Image (tube, rainbow, N blue to C red):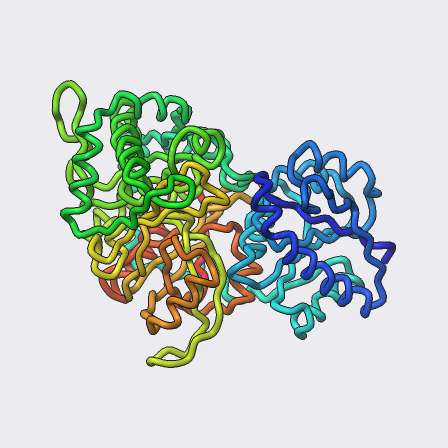
Length: 532
């Protein structure tokens, strides 16, 4: 190969890039050593900026500038030890004609693998050819073998034997009927997806084009986060206090402090309660069956974090919200499915899941998580690779051990959330789950689905995993059936994964097949992943 160029895409937020700079530099050193030992020459395409105190591409503007100095046909490494905003580099990668490999660290603390999965899914949607690799120390056989393959052939082929097309799945007739019936109802009645500003945190992969969504019977209501903020201003202090006291009466804990800059305060929580009420009222006003709040851009400069709101919306048992004029309870006895970080792929998945789980008589609380990290655990009857699934702030209390009594709200990290706000944190209860992901490839909607089991790890292991990742966030210890770590990383087309509980293994299988049949009936290209 010619000289290989290396780029490092990063966050939009300076503090996040600065916090990850040392880890990025150390990772790049190891990557370069591995490539040089294989006979290659690596050149970094953009320098460290002493004023910014980091070396990341941190905007779309800078991404375009950086790519002007990269020959169009050279081999290119995209090295990630940080969360990255894919739009910073999509313009350059879309036009690049040389072989591309995305590489991430394997770490819970430095979220390169989360950023890698988002970038990979975005490249897949954009139709950009790429290879991908990951490693803990960049000296293991898996990584080095991948390096040699890419240097020699310009591509890396991973094991995908865990993926089976829908047509070979032998879907039980009963489950198929349920899925098809629910889809028929959806198409007949149609549904509105409320989108509070589109395209969060560089997740190009999380935007479903209207022309792919409309044939399913789902239509976007494009709402502004400024509308949500304006609606918050109409909610009374008394109403906000009522939500807060409802949560306290349920046994939920709030780690309240005094310093607004570093601690969760009661004032922040009450603002979040106003946002919760405002979101429900707007969903009712516009007839939304599901909503997604972007928050990380724009709203973060006006209000505390949206996470407490998001977790409550996804729960059937939640504080009641009433119409301002008529006093009618809104969405009474129902969850209002919310897709975190306005991930529309998760929104479609959550909407379909909600209807099917209600039809099956199962508890319909569903949420997405980040595929954050994982490692093998042996002990307490467990001998398996256990993933850390950990969304950035909130999951429904119905998923937690002891429900609301097992839930706690802690201040979001100040480095990301200047105005504070509390999370909805808990440890997910043991049980059977169905996991899934909607994604876009070759201009078509596709769908991967599989079974999983949430396990209960010893308290010390849970504590360590929380400290190695983000302590303030809810955590799920998940075993994905019949799928290795590397198979999951190679195939999964998102940093997000959708999860929903079933009452038992048989119920999970029934639900999986019903969801698969529903998505197939809607016209998605469905694959069953792993052991079912």
